[in-house]
Image (cartoon, rainbow, N blue to C red; front, side, top):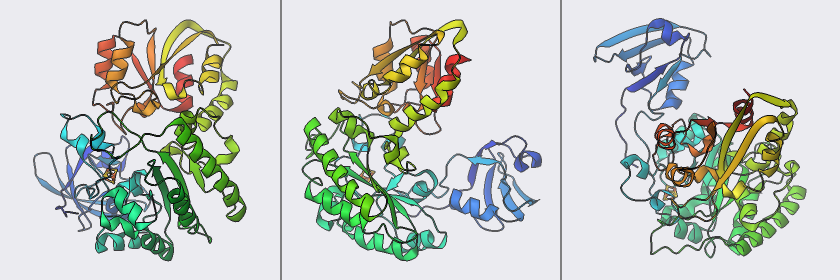
Length: 442
Ligand code: SF4
C-alpha cells in the first residue's frame, strides 16, 4: 500500500437547513482540519465531528483560509458532503485474481474504471468486499482502535495454498490467522466465497465453509455470515485465463452441497449461516428458497435473497395498488433476463390495474458477452442496442441497480441522460418496490 498525503476535503454539497448551510459553507470549500486534526477520511471526519465544540479550518474556493467555531449537540451532523470518502486516496489492491471484474472490462475506458480498490474504509462505510492482504500494522491498529466492524471480507478459500493461488498473492494464505485476530478483538466480518469451478469448489469449498463456521460462536460471532457466489465471467476476460464458467450442472452441484451443509449448520449453530447467491438458482433453473430461510438477509447487497425480498415487498405493497389509474399510461420495465421468470407475478399484478400497461423487456448483455444476465450488469449500450426503434410507451422503468453507486452512469460509463436522448424516451430510475409502484401509479 502506498501512503498518500491527506488532501483538504473538497465539499460538494451543503445540505439545506443544516449547521453548515447556516454558517455559509459553499460547495467548492475545502475542510482542512477539525480541532487541529486533519481527517484522513470520512471515518475520521465522523469521529472528529462527534464533539460539541468544533474549531474548523477551511479553505474557500479562492484558497483563502478561515477559522470557524461551532457549538452543537454532540450527535448533530454538520450537513456537509464531500467528493470522496477517502481524503488521503484509495488503498489499492495488491492481488491479481483471475476473475477480477476490473480486468474483465473492455479497454479504452476512463482511467478510474480500472482502479482496483481493496480499502477497508470503503468496506466499513459502504459494505464493499476486501481481502485483507494489503493492510499495514498501522491500519490493523486503526481497525481495532476505532472498532471498524463489521467488515466484508472476500475469503474465497481458507486453505493457504488455494487462497494464494486464487489471489495470486502469497500473503493471501494468512486468512485463518486474520480471522482469529477479529475473534480476539471482538470485531465481526461478513464473508464471501466466489466459487471458481476446478479451483475452490468441491472439497475446498467444504473445508472453507466449515472453517468459517468454526468462527461463528459466542455472543459476538467473528464471522457473522457467508455468501457463496458464482464466478462472473465476461468476454473481456484475459485469454490465458484458467477459469471455467459455472454450468447448470455445476450450479446444481453447489446448491446441493451448500444446502446439505445449511441443514447441519442450522442444528449446530442455530443459524443458516451460509447463503447461496440468487444467481445459483437462476443458472440452475431451480426455485429460489423461501423467505423464511434468509433470516434477516445479512448478505442482501451481495445478491443473496434480493429477488425473494423484492417479491415479498411487492406482494405486501400490492395490496395498496389502486384498481385503476387515470389517465392511462404505458411503461417499459427493463430487467436482466435472469429474473424474467421470477418477476412474472409482479408484472401480472401491475397489469391488472386498469389503465396501466407495463411491458417487461428482459435483456441479456452483449456488451459483457453473457447469455444470461442479472439486472445490475446491464449497460447503457445493451439498452440502446436492444430498445432502439421499439415503442417504449411513456417511459422506461429502470432498476437503479444498473447505475453505479450515487451516480447516474451505467457500468459502461454511458449516462442516463445520454440514453434517454438517444432513445428519445424518458428514463425513470426506480430504487426498490415502493418507487416502482409510485412511478407506475402517480
Ligand atoms: S482483490 Fe478484488 S480488485 Fe483485487 S484483483 Fe482480486 S477481485 Fe480484483
